[in-house]
Length: 256
Ligand code: PLP
Image (cartoon, rainbow, N blue to C red; front, side, top):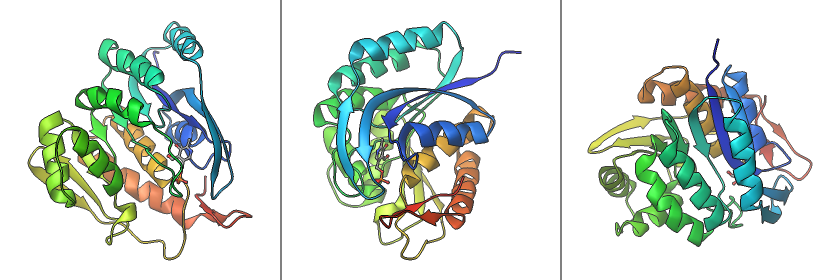
């Protein structure tokens, strides 16, 4: 039997709260066979990203070739993209492989402000957005990506709708940074669906964006329609938040 494999292209956060370790473990917990190539190595504590280093293009390309000789890949998750070189490699994959699902979680900065995806990489990722099934920006990321398409404004309804219409891609605006924390908004062209969520009062969780986007991709691969995939993914994320724990330096990590 051929197994559906999903390829994760994201930064390696050794804490496992975000990035590649989190993405792969979440998908495997959903019985989706996830493969992973790090786009960058990071040094981080729970609260701060201390240093990042992008991997070389050769390493990235050779890893990809080796994986494609081994597995049939039906979906890709894109996270941190440190450089335009790695972004161009990702663009070729997304353009050339017969992928069913591509989810881009545009991690532009860490919660505490360290840049994770460079502006030059973002210029290349702009070309990838129309090839994605779904992008999952928070409001800050939505503003930055929208401005690349000449869309300006501060309201998520307008930005989400226009970005989705221009790119032809579904956009899930995650509510982590707004007044309505925990509520996410899905835009498909002119339509919008709202997904209310529970608030984790006073608990500053690491990696919620990565977890949600990976969980959604896992559900898409398992055959759920997008809205149902988002609903199930949010429920499972909330369960992990309830099972969360506090690190020595005071950040909250989700349960496994
Ligand atoms: N490191 C990596 C590799 C990430 O992908 C992310 C977020 O997606 C972070 C760090 C930052 O996570 P947070 O903003 O939750 O601290």
